[in-house]
Length: 468
Image (cartoon, rainbow, N blue to C red; front, side, top):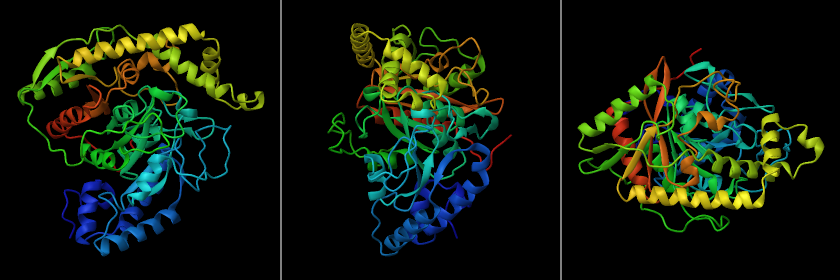
């Protein structure tokens, strides 16, 4: 008999699965088969996976089963069904980057994230969808089509890790790799009602480097905070191929216990001082913050004190796109998403002096936030000002030109390289709302501790089948 709060294998967390693997009440093979049953049922409706490797995954699960039977698992995620975003190389699989310009030939190497997951015994089911080169905050491409929100399939899943978030919401696999250069973990996590962490820059090695270089963080998307902590144990370790990656880390992630909030200083900024937020979204975030105060946290209603840095971010973002586009022939450019090509052309026109001024202003923003965190342990904001809008569109309204206009809470903290996460805090008209927690660089576990409390105080809802 399964000793778990869930009786359906396909609904279990990594923690629940491995407890049952250890007692031999459940096999990794059963878990992986349950994941594929869920994928076969749900993926046609949400388009979360663009590549599946069922035969290979079943064999990996059998290998894991043998290790658990001997009492010699490779790690605490051995045998857990997992996925990799289609911007990250997996040896033996194609890496399409969501682009018609890519090749169908298979990769000869594992990127650090993929390698570490394999070495830990995680069973990688396949690759999740992304917009072309992860360039925007929703997930659709000319190559793979539109990825949809499990809570309402007419709406977007967000992006660029929309496939990972949609898969997580439906537990089509349990542990999901994602990436975030401007909000691409937190945006879809918020829209799909799951947990997503953008760790301190450099904690998770990334190679080859993202075209957005020091804006880009890799991280987990999962249903629970603890499952993400389990992933961080595995992937937040050095790899000599990534020159940017740091070599020091803040302790053993998954051994973190939920500590009391008494004395914790939380700055709550509902708008950052300049964002127009849906009152229904604010109401849910207000309720969550009030609950934290009732648990003993010191809450101050205060803005961090910076103006919208969208022009700084756009200068760096468009320059990264230009780097990609400049390497393509005219024939390849004709295959690109028109929006991606457009920002690449904008990037080509950026003057080097303007670029360097943007980097100086970025450093000043980082200074502001470091001084802010000398006074406050964490900053809380909504993750997004609205719930998910119509799928297939890049912006919420026709008046908006770029995806950054509807994601004002996310990209500032890529500029500052801070840990930032999104944790579910309720629903508005059936669509999830996320709360964002930001900490100073290196203090990821402070943010995770707040997320654990929110998770306990406001338990997330999950699906086993998409809603139309």
